Image (cartoon, rainbow, N blue to C red):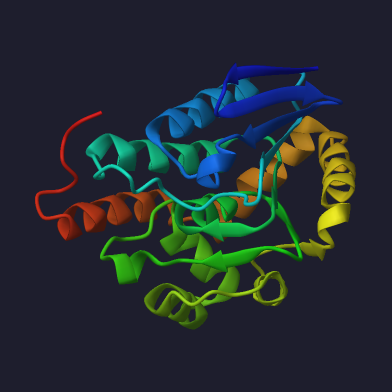
Length: 241
């Protein structure tokens, strides 16, 4: 079954898997407030839906996600919603699979690291340009990236903002598998079904313990990132919708 809750986010549930598809292909799925709010709402719905045993996130068009939409000045609500998506993904007590292709940049990459399993097409390209743009990272990246890639590499990736490949991302522990673009959907569907086949109580306890041990500073990272973002924007991000 597939239906559209909002035109910018497609939501479908099948075989125990809720699939969320970012659907702003003309903007390379850049994140605006409407998309972020739709994601928060959908993840909350997944949490309360007994039919859903795994969550998958993907993107339509030529890219997974090109980061935040910079066509409008950032506001406090932008920052709050971006952080809320990350927190919802990490707190969801069901396995989360991200499948990415094309550009996965900025906040899109940061959200990817909130997943439990990531599969990347060999066409994927990654970059964290925030430092060069004068803004700070979000999504708990200051906890997730060092946990997965090591502190030294995390600093280089964020300070320098260089583009890197899915093969590098896999070697650094940021993605689980790299597959040809034409195989991405088949491999993703198979993997999502495997995650959904886990006993819910087992999946819940594995995710809870791994996060409490390996990402114990996640909530603190969200708070510190928000503070840093507001400091770099002068008075904090300006109020507004």
